[in-house]
Image (cartoon, one colour):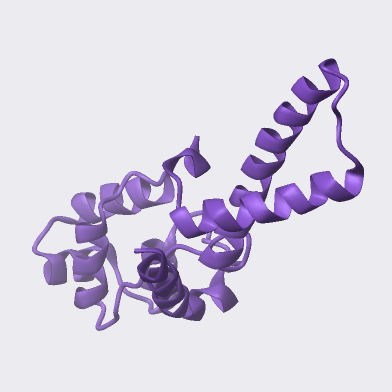
Length: 153
């Protein structure tokens, strides 16, 4: 199971990697549909005919997209009507799923080790910084291997 999690993370990272270069692309304020339609010098009526809807329907669609209230299915339909392909994905803020898991596991390990160390200090049994760091590293590795659900709390 442990190797399977690592393999799944590596596979997902490979799938998401092509999205990394486009993570900083800014969506135009009026949305992609209107921006592309107007750049192509296409009227609302022309796009409406391709989508089998009225000019007003296209206008509402463009407004919904600009406000982030349009479905993926609708955007796929618009892309097809424009002879384009709709693409979407997720890009981890950390750069990869593996780094995201590493970061979350380390934070959780620090929380657990420091809580334990605090209790030991109260009993006058605190450990050195070197031992704390070693414990954090070992616990981080264990948490990653087990893919604990508590990573996401």
